[in-house]
Length: 72
Image (cartoon, rainbow, N blue to C red; front, top):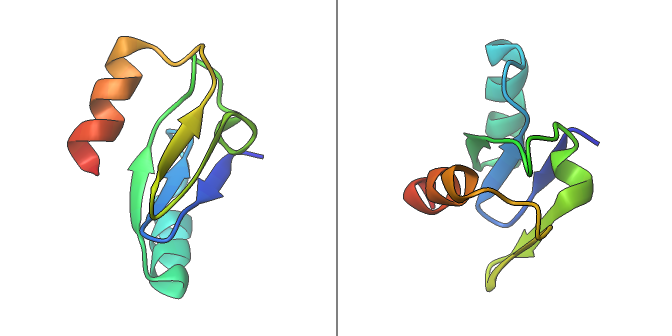
């Protein structure tokens, strides 16, 4: 579970093939945000959300939070 999708964003672990990310974003009509959650690549298991907000593990680091909020 290396990714999760909301109404507007695809949250995916870093270092994934750009063609795969582009294909997913095009098909789903969302923007990608590459991130880890608490340093873990299992973004899909540790982050969920919808058009009202996001819920994440308490292991989220300050730099990860900053990355996510600056992109959304």
